[in-house]
Length: 139
Figure (spheres, rainbow, N blue to C red):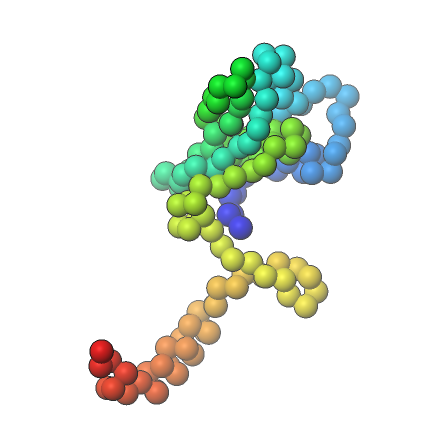
């Protein structure tokens, strides 16, 4: 999982897409999808590419006349558009390796972070120090 914090309007646009909410008039993301189609292009994916100074960057991956076109976008806008277009949401391997989090489900089916908390880390360190022997460092 890649945690990206977004504002309330962006979260609403993503939630509407996830819930298939129809609005009386096109929202901005619907409009952009319509413009892409009207220009004869197709959104085939979005990719979240990097994190610079605590700001995530993304690209819309378009295909027009067999030519790939990358358009820079905010990740929240890219995700909202991808959900509406049915396009996959990708994350660069390097970014996922650096910023990704591993999540699991608890007994109630809710997501929980698998990273140990501070108390678990301290307990693990104490256990290591209590049991380490000089022979453990011989190579």
